Amino acid sequence: MKTRKNIYKLTLSAILIAIGILIPMISPLKLILEPASFTLASHVPIFIGMFISPSVAAAVALGTTAGFFLGGFPIVVTLRALTHVIFVIIGSQLLKKRPSLIQEKGRSLLFSFIIGIIHAVSEIAVVSLFYFAGGMTEGYYAQGFMTSVLLLVGVGTVIHSMVDFSIAQVIWLGLEKRTNVSKKISHIQ
Image (cartoon, rainbow, N blue to C red; front, side):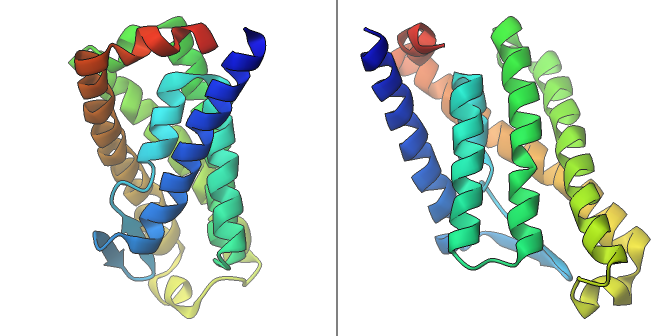
């Protein structure tokens, strides 16, 4: 039985990783606010992994990070992706204790905001290191630290995170309504 659970978790993780790598590559829904850009739904697979279990969430975050690295993205982008491990582990642990956080609108919004803050602070830390080391593109320096890092990366990440969380939540709750997915996967946690 344990082998079957591990195979199920591995399969779910692999599917979500593949989708998480594919979305940034093919999505036409990109918002570019030089020097930053945001791809709609790029975090959806990570959030769905977070809804499933801490181990699936961590696997998806690490897998998508590997995808960015192998895809030749700049190291700052790859390291920003790596920080997703932080918010998904925290978020999935909270959801494990309180699954209702994704079902109740008010709590869900607050939960999404808190996750978005953790997400943004982690990415600001990475970008700040590169910014002060002189490792960013000229666009970051032209806009200045407050605009480029705190506003675009920080506030932009909170908003992007919350939008993607909402998309993932709609998908998850739709699956729950049609297939009772949470009961089907509760045995893997």
